[in-house]
Amino acid sequence: MCLYLEVPANSYYAWRKRVKSKREIDNEMIMEEIKKIHRIKIKEIYGAVNLKAELEENGIKTSVNRIRRIIKKNDIKPVVRKKKFRYPKDTKSEMPVADNVLARYFTAEKENEKYVSDITYIHTRQGWLYLCIILDLYSRRVVGWAMHKNMRTELVLSALDMAIKLRVITKGLIFHSDRGSQYRSNEFVGRLKKLEIVQSMSRKGNCWDNACVESFFKTLKSDLFYERSIKSYDEAKSCIFEYIEVTYNRERRHSSIGYMSTVEFEKKGEKCA
Image 1 (cartoon, one colour):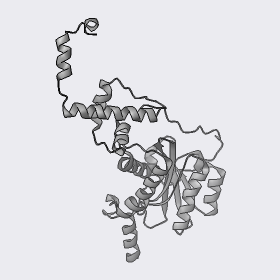
Image 2 (tube, rainbow, N blue to C red; image 1 turned 60 degrees about the vertical axis):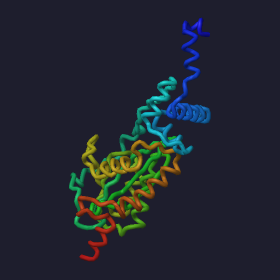
Image 3 (cartoon, rainbow, N blue to C red; image 1 turned 90 degrees about the horizontal axis):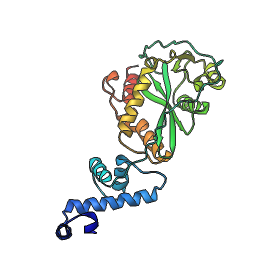
Image 4 (cartoon, one colour; image 1 turned 120 degrees about the vertical axis):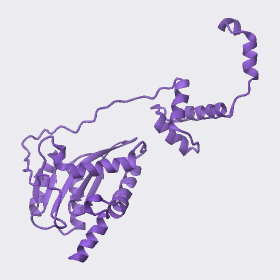
């Protein structure tokens, strides 16, 4: 072997006698665990962030940078699937578009005066999970929300149903959203008319017309999913439920309402009234 590789024999024997450092032994152990993970997850090869999560689940604490060095040294390359996300095309161009009644006035004098709503998507290893929320601009409280594996009209209707059960919907309430087909569907528009709610929609391609909801989604993803891999729909639903109902509505302080939580602000308003 030494003759074939043109390596001096004494160098080979010196390498055999050399005692490995603890770090080298640990690296080899981590590499073996990575190989086990890839044998189980045969359909994909994880990157360093996902591998860190899997290793920690198996009781092995290490850093992302260390994992990157180990897999690079062993020539393991993660499978990168670059799939550009696209919302489903709106084939119903004849669906109505409401005027922008809200006009970026993101303040309200009382509860149930102005609602804003939108849909975002959460990535899990099982696929996309869609989240729809309804925000009351008076207190910034999430008064309605729903999650589903698709973006059909039922998603926004479920969020609206929750808001109706939680709040006393008053005539003339403004409901603002983007121009998504879910919000323009006959079923959803009909429900708003039945409740005597005034529908409002952002201008085409203008996310700033619905900035409050965009800000909420940015905060949610930053707080919950930054450098975190979500395994399943159930895990995502559990995290989002706790975040909205406990952390965001009852604990998180909001600068726009005097650094109070949304629930605390509403209670204070009731006392003043």
